[in-house]
Amino acid sequence: MTVITPRAKRALQAAAATGATLALLAVAPLSASAAIVPLHIDNGAGSSPAAIYTGGSGSHTIEISGEGFDYNPAWAGWLFSDAGIYVAFGPDVEIEDVYLEASTFASHAGGQFWVHNGADATASDEWELTTAGDFDGLALTVQSTFSDGDANSFTCTSGPTDTTAGRVDCFVYTLSAHGSWDRGNDNKIPVYFG
Image 1 (cartoon, one colour):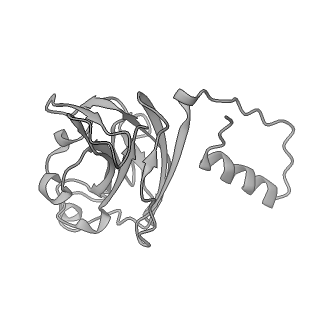
Image 2 (cartoon, one colour):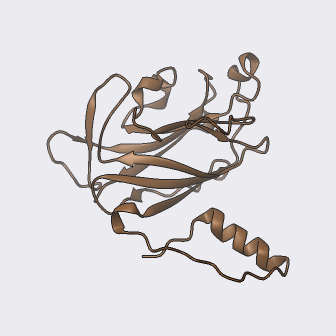
């Protein structure tokens, strides 16, 4: 399978629009276990996909882009300029019950990000959010078996009809950062490992 990420596609479209020529474009095929699953979240339009299917168990990368987010949500913006949002992977929870608990989400590298204006480009858990509320190319790592920040272990379901004992539904979340009660940035998208 050959995958062209949304960022690469936009770069190709921009080059074509300006009349630039490309001498060579090498795209390496990815194995099924290394496939990148694209996800676009349009926060303002509510047009996120109903679910994400990774194609199997193990570790996968979801390349996320988003638009329409409030980069400086209520309350948090009063405390933190450009507070932004969190993008995280985790078990089934109600965001309004856990928005103060980052330990609720995956603890593995790449399992959660602070997405904000002025992000530190050298930080492995930060990503840039424009003041227009857009971001692009965030590589979120999702795993079929993972631990949260409190060392609780989870095994995710393979699909919406998976009722195997001990498995839980897992999700990609977006939510306002730094304890903001503003639920306008909330998204919860199921991730299935089947």
